Image 1 (cartoon, rainbow, N blue to C red):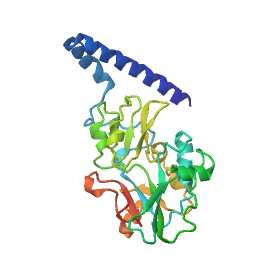
Image 2: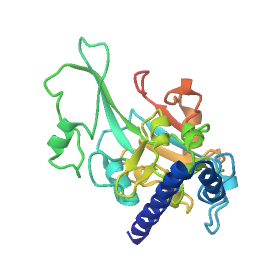
Image 3: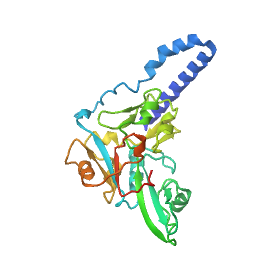
Image 4: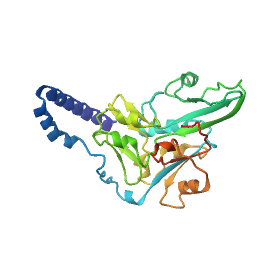
Length: 282
């Protein structure tokens, strides 16, 4: 919590500085622009520049290529993954901010498309009795359901991430081991990355005034642990591992199943691989 408090203070100071700099530019014109060009490089990092390797004892990110799998045929919509993620990563305990979430797809008799809702749906919030608790309301108990399934979603850690391309200060960057991270000491809260993500995987943290998202629990996986959501899943619907290890759970999952990715037409090359979804899942 102390770290988050300090981050908040740092962000407020930086925004205040940038605000004063912008005002100076408006008044002084070209002279201020020259001054800004001399100052801002210390506050930005070019997206093309390689990020420094993390100072994690015993971890070499050049030796790993992380990937994630989701087996929608197993997911039961218990939402333990969502709760574990919020606890592990100190995500706001409400029904509007999530690093990972679960969607329900229901096909009713006589309807062509799926009805889709998530734990953030008002009906589900009412059923849970609190914005800090999550469940799916049994709203289809009297309907004739042809097919239904749950789809866990999270950041796809794209091979070609559009969020990295649009970040004006280099706060969002891709690591050598395949994870897209956000350096909150650089983030100015412009939310360009939120708009650029076609998967809705990013959100704005109003308290800290920065963008946030799933990191596959980078602080855990670099220490040999599983992401929190994977660890708590009671049915093994979430799979994680190193693709450089051909015997890892994720390598076997991809090898033994006909997997799909979300929105392949974007060319982003997501690294979350799905089994058991249909074309309506976007």
